[in-house]
Length: 328
Length: 289
Image (cartoon, rainbow over all chains, first blue to last red; front, side, top):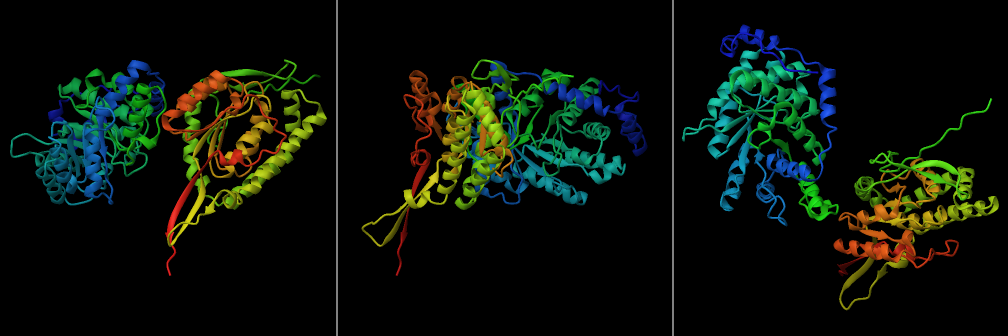
């Protein structure tokens, strides 16, 4: 079992004081038992969720989706279509909930805003923008911060930033920490509140589960509101064991500090079945408090169609097909 | 020393692979005298669902091939069947209770039928399509196109010749199929799936489910991503056939209706089995100068 990680003694305040103390703290985190973690994740994936529980899970999963399009070929038209779909995922069924957010590149934020606003803005759908030289994160800090401020000014409610994996892997934890802190500051809005900051760890590039745990703690200590697995541009993207380790980290972080941090697996989750496995894992590892779109999200695009098809199947009693949903 | 029997449990054929039933169930298959022969997988509605996904995925590639290429592949299936002739003869003998000579003839017919349908691949357009005379300076051309994913309920009695006679005409024009084999005589279908897997037919073009049509067919008939259904396998079961036709109406599936009794498969089938699963597309094109 990967188990509960007992947190090394010194308070988190001390840990973030210097590069050396940060390293001491992160390397003092208990290691992850790889075989145990994978076995537990696989075990959680075998739970059978049926009938009313499945209906609940499908609706919850739809409400948790960050409907994402992060392509060079994104056009305003495509983004508008996506935003409309986010508000009314199944136009044939008004009881279908809207998704949590639309996630786009910063230059498309205004387009999404307009589309949501034109519909009255009552849908509750948020606008998320990736920033800080997404997806590689390879740019100077001031460029990354300008990128972030642009997105916030354009009206993004949530910022998805990437960490500098090169710095993290070469052990320059302080640099990663400072960048997150600075980006968090750049998320401030004139109104006084902050855009929510999601920190993308890009776990596919972190090599080990130990690193995933360390990066999770590093991001949380630096003030992340959410920790997110991947950009979706690197394989492997989100996997169940990685998400489980991040859920353990947010659970332990709340025990230690009282602050709750959200988790967002992104990339590679394509079927309703997969999504339900993640929900089971959330419930079993972090607890019921995280079973809420404010604390758990799916970064996905094709997933929504499968969720809608499964939902339609449950309501009509017959299998549905891709002909009846928008392609994206 | 006597050898211990190798007792076989056959599996389904979905998307070019041989998975067990998602339900984990299998059922005993007996020969015509009631003696145990082997276990066959008992397909569930979820296997049908997976098979439809596989068939849909394979459709673009299969229908996009040239008719000539599809003919070659069907001919290749006939070749591989010829290679495995003894196995088919034995399976047909066991399941249908035929004499060795008769079973041999049935296998002949089945292979010949495949070759016959293979020949139709690049000829059906000439026969069914047309250049229509219209009152204007236009070419007006009608060409047949495959319907899409076809659910096929294979005949219950004729487990090999009947099976080939419903599967081959559907796929030769570019449709992909989900077949529910004969419930009591599934083994020739299983052997046929092993032939398909080794004869250049892309995975997903033919998917074979062994199990009960009464259980699986309603799901296929109601499935919104199935474009047509062949009810031959429920010949004579009027109530079930009606139920399936009603379910099929939801997405306007093309239905090939169940005959009152299972037809004599040795007769010349004609073109109807092919044209049942074709859509006619008509295009107008200016003649120019």
